[in-house]
Length: 247
Ligand code: ADP
Ligand code: MG
View (cartoon, rainbow, N blue to C red):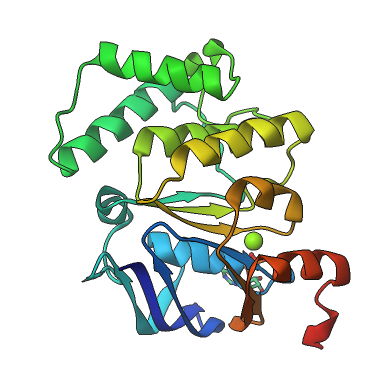
């Protein structure tokens, strides 16, 4: 069964065409990686899947779990089980991490008709995740991504991933800016998330994170289109040879 079907998606930002007839599916349990030169539309695709208001779908559809979500609000997509880890997570001054995470957790659970759970149960789960991600517990009283290093921002996204328990996670360069140790921690978080039922769509430039992601398929984007698809060996080839074949 397909968890995601992207059908002939044509997307504009204002009058600029960014995604041009993009189609692909992701099956339940599948891991798909997207590679491609800078500016090819990878982040736009990730943001459009989540419903970012900067982008207008002019034609085509996004089907998630059999429902057309092309016009759904981001929070409705999140409740349905979609999650995006941003390439460049926003810093939001004044938004303290603990209440933000607890509110998001409660909203998602309520929307999914699960028991909201007490603040104590949440705190326990949060502390476990902080430990697994090797994040200092001081974090809970910090403000969202405010003065976080690049690596800390990526861990903050993975913390949100764990607490959101989505069925399809989209990672936009989750591995960029991570040193070797942080990459290992991030990789383990990705592995904890991934099972037979959960699916993954990961934008990356690097082979090194594929040790943890283990893609079933690799798609190549260029100039707003999917121009090539293949197995995991394609990722190795692209990292070695670059995208010169596209010219
Ligand atoms: P990638 O993630 O593959 O590097 P992006 O999706 O970030 O590429 O960008 C694809 C193209 O769309 C680039 O030319 C970028 O400048 C343009 N673009 C992205 N977002 C917007 C926007 N909100 N308004 C105008 N142009 C945009
Ligand atoms: Mg990008």
